[in-house]
Amino acid sequence: MTSGRENLLPILDAPGSPGTRPLFGLNNQELSVILQHFEAPAYRVRQLSQALYHNWTDSLDAVTTLPKNLRDQLIAAGYHIGLPSIVETYTSVDGTERYLISTNDGQTVETVWMPEGDDGEWGDGSDAGYHDSTICVSSQIGCAVNCQFCLTAKLGIIRNLTAGEIAGQVVAVLKRHNVRIGRDRINLVFMGMGEPFLNYDAFMDAVRLLVHEIGIAESRMTVSTSGIMPGILRFASEPVRPKLAISLNAPNDTVRTAIMPINRKWDIQHLVAAVRQVPLRPKEKLTFEYVLLGGVNDQLAHADEVGRLLRRVGRPLKVNLIVWNPGPLMSWEMPPPHQVMEFQARLKHNGIPAFVRRPRGRDIYAACGQLKQTGQVRTNPLLPAFPFLPEAP
Ligand code: SAH
Ligand code: SF4
Image 1 (tube, rainbow, N blue to C red):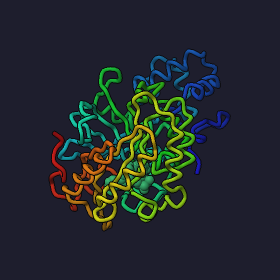
Image 2: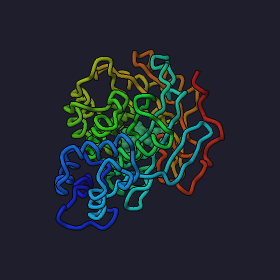
Image 3: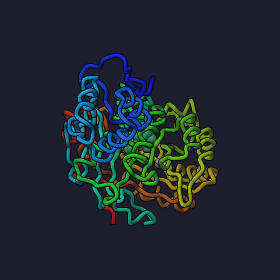
Image 4: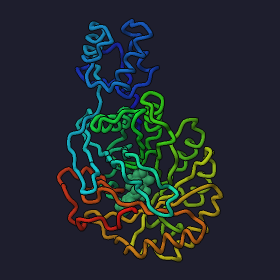
């Protein structure tokens, strides 16, 4: 599958239909190729880039720093800003918002806003004090990985998102909440629909735009992968990159293969070998995510196995426990709260820092693994009105 980015670069000699060539998502080098075609001086690149990534301008007409004739030429050639827009919003009892965001080809992608005042984790308090808003960003429409517990998997893979569509989700949400970069602190998690490392180039292009042009620090970003080994190895040599989270989800290969078929291709040993290649920055920790499925991977013996496995990684790390979020046509079970607490305590007893992720927006299908373009579904009938776990202290 292609990244889609090659379609963004214009065939400059051919005229484009109106609004078919999005500028949002292009880097300075690509903008410069376009502007040179129209014989604009080099400083126009910075002006256009400012309009796109700093002012978050919606339409080329509004980019008044560019001369009108240049704007008209761009529009006539089919260019437009192409910033994705929010078409539907679902609001959870806990303040979380889930959006359907429309892309230029009429598809929708899902993005989630988790407002400040919640660290999303509770455990031994070592991550406490983290009270910033978080945006959960999608990297693909659907997903090919087919994890058995995940609602997004039911869609299959529809297509990769472009860098502009990935970074554009962030900007659409920042605009909605009047977030100002530099004044407000914001975290990004690439944990929405799709597998970022199966859309590696567009994902990393989006990260570079978000860091260099939009101004969000890479240290405030986390990407989660189901364990795509070639992607992890490429990621290991990136000079600018988010923090890394690995969806482990099982204590051994037998259980992991049963719930994550990708484990047949890259098993736990491969995964551990790959993550050991990632050079960590000072104070950085690897995160291992672990979705607790009642009766499947939530026993204390499993926690002991996870402890042994993770000690072998030999790097600073922590575990995020995620209670399975239910969805239609899935027959897994949520473990009872005492099981979750005991599992967490056992991991800690084994020397592994462990946190329980407080579920956010489960009533509106906004929580981990629930993103499936459930436009028609306003509330989740499978859940009680209140969150399953107690509020974070
Ligand atoms: N594709 C990437 C990132 C998106 S999924 C990945 O799999 O890592 C983000 C996290 O949600 C993963 O850790 C995944 O294991 C978890 N997840 C998927 N479905 C879930 C569900 N129904 N309940 C709880 N967590 C789920
Ligand atoms: Fe894809 Fe992640 Fe869902 Fe697995 S858990 S199917 S990798 S989105």
